[in-house]
Image: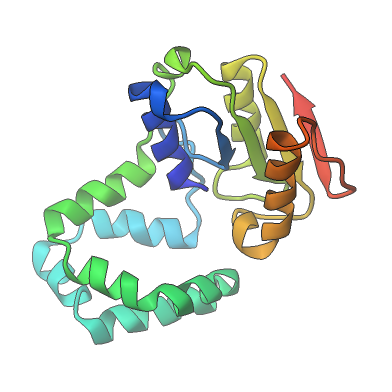
Length: 193
């Protein structure tokens, strides 16, 4: 899902024996392919902050405030933040400014354009028709770059498909892996390139 998909792409290219099947939901895959929305703009701004500001942000009460703000701005991630808050606080609280900058930069600078020719498997690409982070246009571009791969667009969904309608993702995976067919549903639009 999203950045996890980018990590899986990297793994499939560098260690192909470890990846047999791939379902990628809105993976960022080319430089500047992620749309710069509100939360992403905040992350991009964080990259350029001085170390002392990073240290301030890492304080639990400040980080909790930032997470509550993110929940208000993006209500659909509120559930994730509520269930993962302890992990988020632990990870960010223990990350040094240099590592944090590297992580944030990697979110905005994935570039698999030259690596995709080395990909030995054919992933199923999944996207929401209303995704504003990695748009359907970007996913179509990725599908065309991969030649001969399938795309499924989940109608009326944004970037958080796995959070909002996990049953739809499960159906796509089940039907492809177990039933050996494309999942049919009124909420799916399949495109083969």
